[in-house]
Every structure is written in C-alpha cells, then in structure tokens.
Image 1 (tube, rainbow, N blue to C red):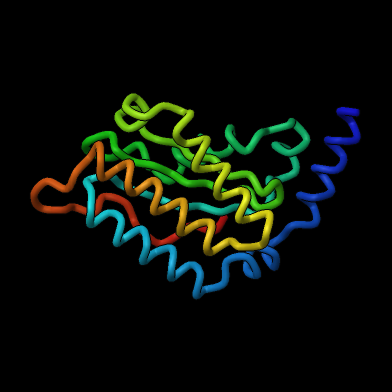
Image 2 (image 1 turned 180 degrees about the vertical axis):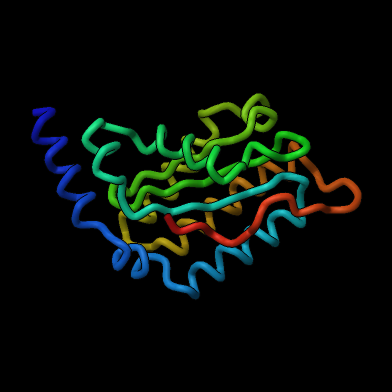
Length: 169
C-alpha cells in the first residue's frame, strides 16, 4: 500500500511542472497576492511571505520529503526567520500535493502554536481542491493577517523587512 501511495505521489510530482504553476498562479493572481500581503502588513508589525513550488525535485521526493519539511527549508532559504521581532510567517504551497504549510518564526509560533496554522491550512486546501487558488490564498493571507494584527499590532513607523512578492520555486 505504501509503495503505491509513493508511486502515485512520484507520478503526480513528475507531471506537475511550471505550466501547472503558471495556470494556477498567473501574473494577475501573483499581483493580487502581493497587494494582499502589502495591505496586511500595513495593519500589523508581522512579516508575511508566500511561496509556491510546483513539485519536489526527484531526490527529496524519492526520500519521502514532506511538504512540512520542505516548507521549513524554504522558510530558511527565504530568510523569513531574519526579522527584528521574530515575527515572520511563511505560507508555502506544494502544488503537486495541494498541501499548504504555514511556518512561523519562534516569536509568533510561541504565541499561536501549530493548531491555529493547521486550521488556516485546511481552509486554503479546501479552496485549492476546487481550483480556487487565488481565493484560497487571499483568504489565508487575511486569516494570518488578523492573527498578526492581534499579537503584533502596528506600532510606530513600519519597516518592511521581507519582500511582498510571491516566490515561485
């Protein structure tokens, strides 16, 4: 059973490429996500990044890397952890698996915990199953933004420490 599950996953990843990524996230959708991140960050002192990856490379895929494990790697690669107040949050989508992961810096994670992020991920994944990528992402960004505004309210001059543009991997 596990082998067939792995084979299905491998086939799904091998067949999900940049064309699928562009169909799910055309320029207009990326622009809308960037605007939503910018608007969200104006309401709080949190920092938000969004990254979407079509599929895993073959070596990590065959090793069984999970979307969560990959999200932690991307969190580090994009330096989301490198904020003055430890208030960075990454929303990561592994398109081939339709799996959303939210990784928060230690300051945010200590306040909210994984259960809060899991609920937001489930809502986004439900939208993605229906092909509603833009709606799902924007709803997720707003949900994360509300939480950041509660725990990191806007205080004084705003410094944008991380780029707002979505990252396609």
